[in-house]
Image (cartoon, rainbow, N blue to C red; front, side, top):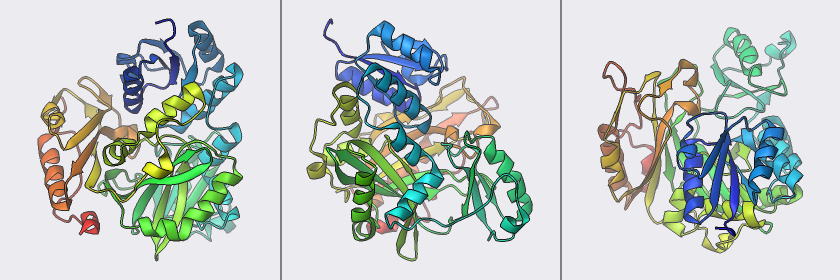
Length: 430
């Protein structure tokens, strides 16, 4: 045990549970820090601490006390800078610099950088907290308003008119450390896609790409995905329109290793990015990539945290975004309430075509109204691999009929999910 590597995890969410579990399988001693007493990853960690990840002095104290060999975070922008600062202070590996984190977590800086490299982006309107009349008169509705530097859909509103916009801006500012908002055309009518990448020794490669089916039942809230379908019919557009420009951009930013993702709308045959992340994505699509292409991006990032290199696989050779199967990440979204009973989950876990279920809430947990329209209303992500589109559709239908999350009145807390009757996204596989 003396030579066992020790890894400090900043954050203990359900997604981090999976990362900690993988680290333990690799023989790593795991230490989790966050300000939640019973966060999921703490349930399996070798050691845990109750402390804010933004309290750098306390995190450094914990790191030195445990003589850690590396620091790891992912799935949320909030912990990137703290992890970077801790690693830099202790002389430990971290894949991203402070400058790279700033560019990739600030939506306005990201879009400015895209334009510098010739990458077209979703158009936005100039507006600040002063709500100047000359700015308001240029707005074309509907628009989406969001903090420029927040995450997990916090502070986001959909606005159909000026009254709603004037209410949405101060709301968004509550979630912005930089006190800056972004107002974009609302593009809900267009296909919504996400691309995922590996960076390894300066080589960028597309690992997967999905089309997102968005939930339409929460008016005025940021839409959350019902399902992420893989592979994506728009993969050829990436290679035609973005690959070379994105390679130039990542090289220009000095990004050499790690994982990243980029969200886009497809408008009149053009991929228009609007956000990116230089980290493991909360969708945890690497679970599907591991099943399809035998490459595990999470393990590569764990290796980097300890050894300073994304080792384990040659990503450029292994990545094949046009998967052999029809896959989906199905999201179970909840309305507010207290969970008193969960039915069907273990039966679903036993199905061979269900590759994994990442659970975020348990019996006794309470979901507040403030979680609506954010990623915090997700009960679980369910990873499904079908042999073809018809089988995948049948599996989705079975999951949605089987899983029940009941409140104190015995009523279903899960809201309407993917509409299996329309199956419009699945037509891409025909």
